[in-house]
Image (cartoon, rainbow, N blue to C red):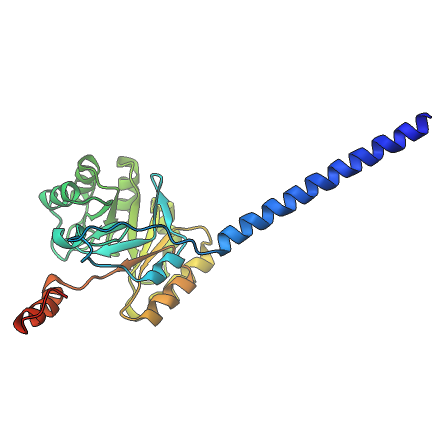
Amino acid sequence: MERKEERSLLRDRLKERRRKIQETHEAALNILEAEEREVQPPQINGKLRSFALRVPTQIQKCSGIVIFGRRIRSLVFTTDIATIRNVDADAVLAVYPYTPQQIITEALVHSADIPIFAGVGGGLTQGKRVVNLATFAEMQGASGVVVNSPTKNEVIHELADTIDIPIIVTAVSAEGIDERVKSGAAIINVAAGSQTPEVVAAIRKQFPELPIIATGGPTDESLEQTIAAGANAIVWTPPSPGEVFKEIMAAYRKGEAHP
């Protein structure tokens, strides 16, 4: 009698174990199917705001970089407020070829509805001024600061000791990245022209977990190569307002409606 009860209990346990294994297997399949299925979220656009700049859809293949709880896959390379307010990029890479000014960062942060990563020097502007500009940028609400490739490691180290937002260091080659990381670089921004995919791949080989953003290049092919090389996020250069206006004005001259 006791042996029969033991067999019955064993059968019940085996049955329960099989049920749990099956449930786990089904749950894993559901997760896998959900990840493989490209679910397009519903989109809502206004009548007037439907005319806007769209970043290349290939950028969605990037893993992104989660910064303060927000995933960043695309960064628009501009300081034009009208462009910033009419683009679907995740963030702004606000660097420009002049010495950084506090009032420019303030205007961008106050005008944008997406995170601003503000350029604070590293080329023409060096030393303590870079640290001061970065401090101001953090106080004004920037989500991160960007320094150019000539920036000395000592300055990066001082930045890391001073501010509590990510330091993005621009790189034009794969050399010296370990020292950049040791000094306090949180993200590497690869801007190596036509060699960008190769530089990204070289850095990714050295640092499998290092966040990398990179310029996507002028073509779909260069963009795909940069993503495949290991870039977590892509910097996209939008057309200038003049280029956008060119098509609009061509239509107006023909008496046609807004394209």
